Length: 109
Image (cartoon, rainbow, N blue to C red):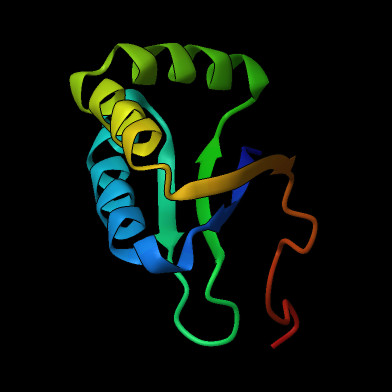
């Protein structure tokens, strides 16, 4: 069973458009580099500063290989530099979780 990486971002609320561009770039680079991207989520209602990135990866060893590929990917490198230059990410936390509720639904139905 894969693990899921949840990245919680605190972003500058006045630079939401920059975060959206960052997310779109990862939408291309992350799958190409080997992770199963669920998506990036920008603020819509409620908090104006909380955003998420979510993807699945087979295990932590696969994660390390994926991160190396992402760092070597041209769009990956460009996106890291874009975030550094524009400074729209104020804080980033990453956690790896394993799905505990599967199987979903009523098996008897």
